[in-house]
Length: 116
Image 1 (cartoon, rainbow, N blue to C red):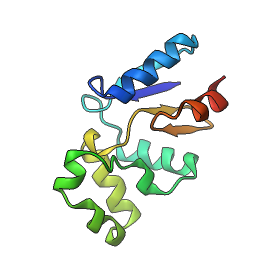
Image 2: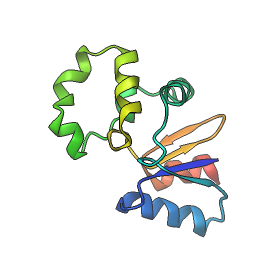
Image 3: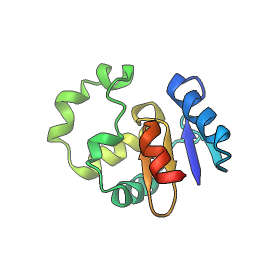
């Protein structure tokens, strides 16, 4: 299982603590130093079954600076995936990735249901 985080993010810290407390093994990945690729994001998007917008960090500074709220509805799926793969700070975090499931953001009840 892959745990993708931005180490300075308080939500990521909470999620990591939760994983450790529940003795769940994971491989850690820094979302900025090792940004998910276009192909990875495409695969994860398909596995997740979620709208692509859920992968965007809509509360992030970069999202607001780029005015993505207005631009995303007019962008194709390919354009959105390319944009996400261009900068890890655009991606909602933390992310849990395994072969069957993708968890985006930390919601303790959803994580417990999926991982315990």
